[in-house]
Image (cartoon, rainbow, N blue to C red; front, side, top):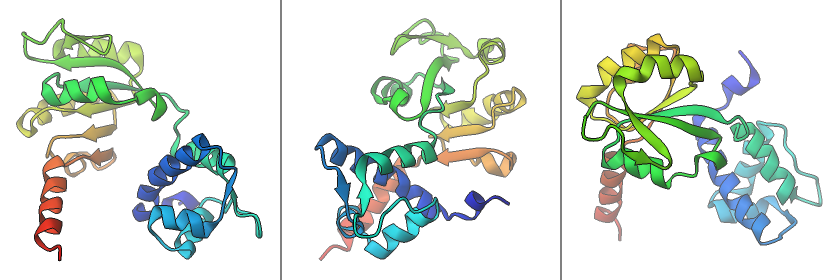
Length: 211
């Protein structure tokens, strides 16, 4: 097991926030920041900041703090944002359209190269300069373009058939907007589940329990 395998998901899930805040500081031409000030921005403790960053090597200098631009680039590399993973989108409905049109994939380590649907009315439509293709074309397209990951913006009941097809093509990474449990069926996949309803229910809980 590599060192990175032992890093907790709670640390990993804070990395994008570090990157986002450091990018904002960099745009403000702030050259350096202390762990205390970075902790205040992150709404965690300075000790937690140091622990988080020590998981990947530290990067700070005693008495100086952190170079904002350097730490931003280090976290960018840790997150793999330069990898330009080739992605396809499955589902050109309202959610799929929103994802295709409003995400800055090129800044987030991905290149969206294809979009697929099985609804004849959507075939041929254009999403962010990508023509929607029929799912029947998946195999040839993925084989030719060496796809790394798929974004699933389809209902749960539609996932199983298309997932088996994608998995057979060697695609084992998914950004999953459906409620289908991919890892239960394919344990060797890397899946990031996005449950919008769970997030909204969490907001409801917090509102319900706010003083």
